[in-house]
Image 1 (cartoon, one colour):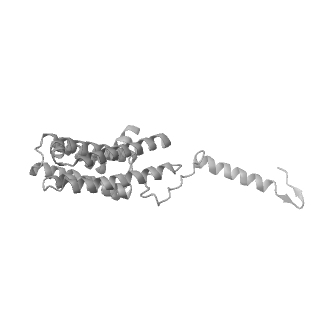
Image 2 (cartoon, helix red, strand yellow; image 1 turned 120 degrees about the vertical axis):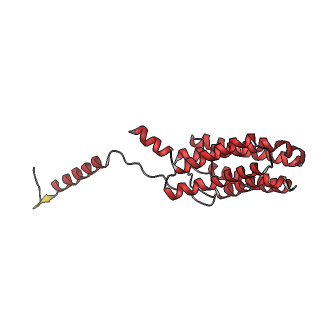
Length: 226
């Protein structure tokens, strides 16, 4: 029964959409860069990145597994596209873009390391700046063919750097990890208080305490005996 329930939590519509993005990203390996098929497949993968989150919110099927799967799908997609477009980018991008790219990657790794050390988990953040940088990074391949690659990469790197710096400040000064936090200006949600014991046991304990207090109440100046 537990196995069936676990599969139902994993085999959800949002996770299915995310898996389609992973499959599409892997299919890009065998496609010619800048071809109509390449751009169409890449566009579908990008649209699915927003669609799976929308489906999760509408159906109420958000989960920790879904967030991790979404992060894996993003890594597979952008890693594949980067390797496919690397020859064209090497020939056309300015040298300072590569230095900035290396610094942005180091900052992002620092965010992952900070979360892992402070909160004992591997987690990707989803702040508003992170979402903006994801959109700008997604648009970079469309800027290479017209010759706007320096502008496209600069905007994406600026947003990615700002997002990483915000997250470093946000989690360095926080005592708990809150995945719903969208900006450094937003306070983390308080942790729910843990209740010890089952509700039935707590109710019985409350009833016994109330009963004892009634017994100990004085009757005509004297304590009532059982």
